[in-house]
Length: 101
Image (cartoon, rainbow, N blue to C red; front, side, top):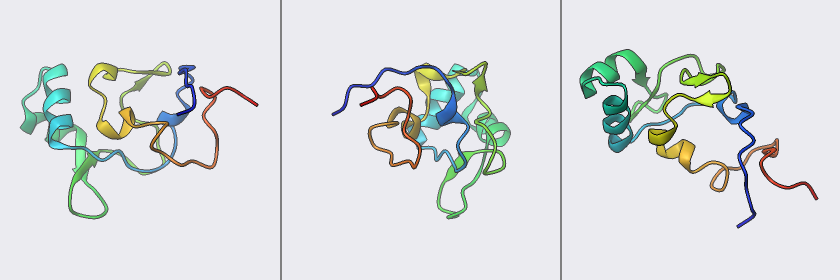
């Protein structure tokens, strides 16, 4: 695995697409925000385009709603999809957190 050091640029939180949520993500984020799971789901999620799961609410091509000053406001409990970045993602633009050759 390539070495990685987050530069806190927030670019990954601005890419288009959906942030899909697991049940564990919903539980942890709701707890962090001091909300019930139902309240979190109502306020911060929407049905994903596949109509099989939930994702963070908002238009597809907007920054993550939890991005504040290039920082993740829920970083300790960020969704699994976000925790998997950058090692389990394929993107056309390399993350600046990887060393340049």
